[in-house]
Amino acid sequence: MANLALQSASTGLNALNTKLDVIAHNLSNVNTSGFKASRANFQDLIYVERAQPGTENALGDSRPTGLYVGLGVKVSGTQLDLAPGASLATNRPLDLRIDGSGFFQVQIEDDEGAVGYTRSGNFAVNRDGELVLANDQGRRVLPIVNIPDDADEIDITSDGRVFVRLPGDNEPQEVGQLEISTFINPAGLKPIGENLFVETAGSGPPTTGVPGEENRGRMTQGMLEGSNVDPTFELIELIRTQRAFEMNSQAIRAADETLRAIGQLRR
Image (cartoon, one colour):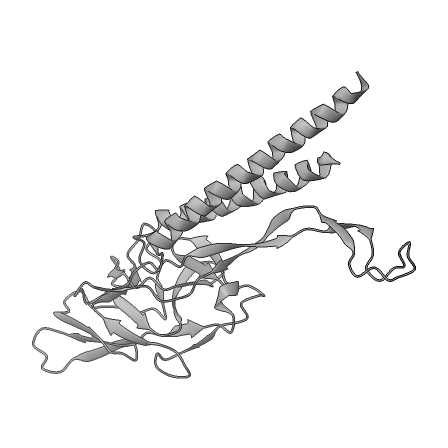
């Protein structure tokens, strides 16, 4: 009956609407430093079995195929694309890029000591001299690094050591050590906004340490990692999604006309 077609096409519209939301989110963050694009993955739904393969047919032979009618599609999940974004030269001493695997750590809850993870390395100094994310919340970078207010120069090495040069000093002074975290399954991290992710059971616990050690990436000062969104690819996916949406709408229209014709047979 055409009611199965209505069911399948309606699930298609719902799934494609979710994919459209994901694409729009990606495109809106095309200029967000450190942003990682997502994609919607699909899977088919349960099937109605009307004939089983291998059963005996009217001729006494075995059926080579079965008869199954599917009930549509659903979005099985969204998957992060962790490919690195383009390198953006800023020449700012507090802008950092991770060349390789890993995430910066920031403090997201003062009371609980919870940790957020980000690829965005646009940092600044707050009124207490602490290194923080340069956004509206100003999350503290972990481990906490204090920059003296009279520092003339700031130098951050590829292994995360922070040096400052104070007035009258000939040699730079080390004031902190930045660390980065890696995950066995970074695609399992949970995005919470502000360019931040948090640990989940799917991501596994973080392995934190010095940049450049144990497969962790190294830091580059004066650079940022751009968004890894490919606008051309996303626009092509947008067109494909729109066309698929139109085809599912046509399927609903055809099923509706079929049911209307069946309903008029009694007249």
